[in-house]
Image (cartoon, rainbow, N blue to C red; front, side, top):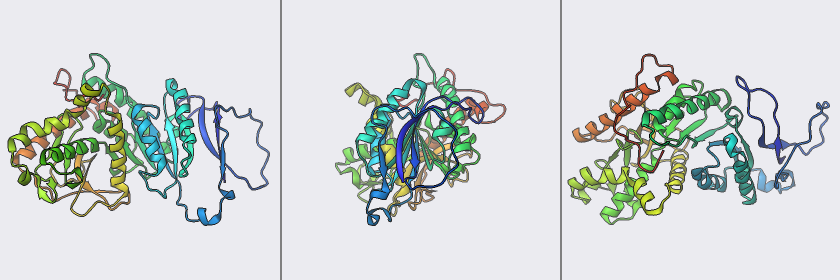
Length: 416
């Protein structure tokens, strides 16, 4: 089987709307001579850069190829952005899905980013990753999500001057409504979806509600960066190395109402509160340090946390494809339906979860929730309910109204 990178010009219409023209694909080409009916006349394929490269696995020693796993298809939106610039190379290297897992990358951009996407694809090609079997780029989500096993939804509109969180919810909600419908029609029926673009919890909710053919349980909002930041702070405070921190959960929304759970956290197997005997620190310093970390980074460096966000995306995926260590957990925003903690259903809410490494997960049911933690969880839950009502018209919910206009901004500093 040979894989040829080429540029195709599509003149047809999409399923419901006119598709953008022009996408770069890696097309499988059979190298064996096979009788086939004559194809209709077509314009010669256009190409640019080195996008005529082919790789023929039939030329390889069968002992190398017969054990190869089936290639997984990973769609990435916002693929020419700063986060993707770090993430894509981790994905292609095998660092995320495994050193024996072939991968096809399907990269979605906008009309303005088409040339940048071409550059991204060329860099991936020049990196000679042996696990990277295919690359395709385009601006039509119906095409890029085609048969995707994973959809990493990074792209989102940035906050403009004077915009409130309600405005950001509306503008990005419209994007995720369209992309949710595209996932519903084009992606694998068991596609795993991770939303990174903010406000990620409610964007994930919108995508989920517009993709009824994909299990609700398969939608995730990224709160792993918050977990990683919380582990960092506990390690710094305790003087221990960060790998000793476990059971560090983030509850609720990816906003400043998030709840880093120090009550159930462990450091070297010991409760964090036994090792750090300073409740004032936990209640007055720990949570703000986690929630405001992105803003502090920008003040120091002048850039947003794109690299650490990309690392946290990789961590979030590995949490689903590698079994969770006994007694540990990972944080991810998932549908709250049937949760064991009394959080109202129908929200994408961050919980402590565990996985067997099969891409699925379960919400941990053994976390202690005291009165202080419950009150904090309830505040984040109330905010997510208000966000849901702000986008009710995008998820088929009648009678919603937006109570966030004029409210205090809870967006995590340094993020959209």
